[in-house]
Length: 214
Image (cartoon, rainbow, N blue to C red; front, side, top):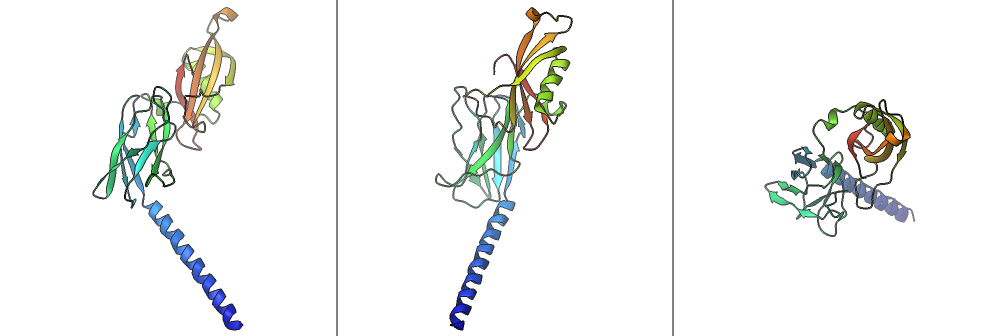
């Protein structure tokens, strides 16, 4: 009996050790992964190049989470080409300004994953130099004061349209009504849709764009 118990304990220890080594191997593989984008910040309508290294697979596909085309269709997977030890390819040009997480997969049946901190940023010039706020609504108040030089009358969050696939954790849409300076009459009030964004999860909020339509 003691021999059987000892054998069971030994087998359990071996299984735990193997599982630990497998987990360490996966962590090591992930830690070696490197994703480079060129340019790191693209303009609207501009394609970007991607280079992925530190991944061992027979194929690698990429897509931008939340990117849609002009008709609101979701992104499709693009196959990367292996050059030496690096996978290369082009990313599509999203139809909207914003920040888009990069997703990878190692085959059509493989689960997609997002390399930490890998985003394609599609911004207008000087976007990242704008003031940052902890509250996205403060971005809207700043825009009203700085650009129309007006005062806020009403402000509320607005749902993203169905064709807008951008990550709501990174983009917040608001509708704001404001009174132009020296024109306080109700008939003079104007409105705008303002989008705030954060340059990564947990980052502060900045102005992305102000538009007449959501």
